[in-house]
Length: 344
Image 1 (cartoon, one colour):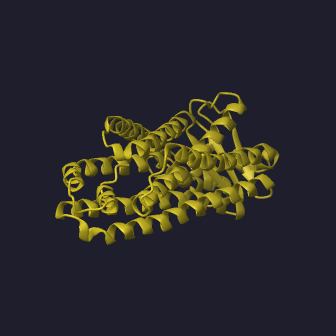
Image 2 (cartoon, helix red, strand yellow; image 1 turned 90 degrees about the horizontal axis):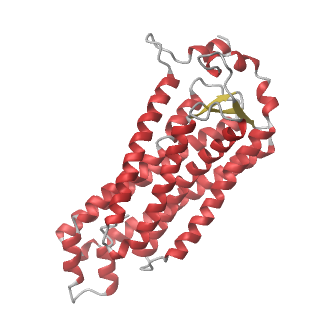
Image 3 (cartoon, helix red, strand yellow; image 1 turned 45 degrees about the horizontal axis):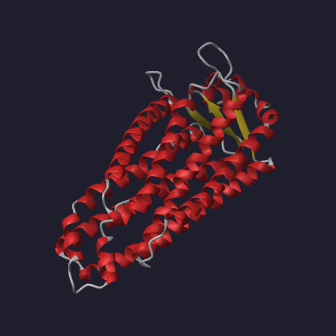
């Protein structure tokens, strides 16, 4: 079967639905859920009265803003990724579709940069917990802002390298005649969709894959090392806790590991696919669309976990107050017990 017919069929079923239709439905649902979850989390964080977590609440508010920006970018841009024989193609299908090409590049940059930010910011969450629980050293707002700026710079570099790759290879993408003839690149009026692509022969594409790979390895390493260290410290302190606090601690540990697992999944799958698509001659039907579908899940993951933690932490308020009044516990024990109800 030719490439044209393969892309035209695009896993269609008898009702005429194809994987791109499922992607658009998935995106609309995820955008709505993400906006709702982040809004609820912002309200919970604003209303929080826990003095121990005031600084960390600012970090989470920052996370919510980034997630909302990413959600808005997905909603307005409806950006879709396609892969064809070593070429990664980005299509802007949404509200800005008819805008000048500059805005297409701007939305693609914002799309990749904010996606990277929402993932890298998890490093700060795990680092904050590690320093507070394992080292009993609460980070200041200035230190958290500095960490955020470093990670945002890495995210911006990855997005900038991608845009440079897109700007440098338009002619190479246009040489794929069978791709240009396929109906998926045209709107209902027969007008060709504006799209941009990057190839592995471009140095900026290699810089992007390198930067994205470093960000991926950094996040995986931080989550694994700091997450395991925090988990181990909490387990070792269980003998100093009451029955209620132990139950709360177990629930928090489960959520902590679920957050790490989910974040690692949404990092490894799309980033690994993107790097593989740029380095290998991949021509799998729907490969890029599946990548796009997973990327839309990003802004839903963190608020889901944090809302659950806010709920669980709220159940431990009375136990924390009682423990704080105990004269037989030193500062380290009190701090460790209080932080079993991690209010992220």
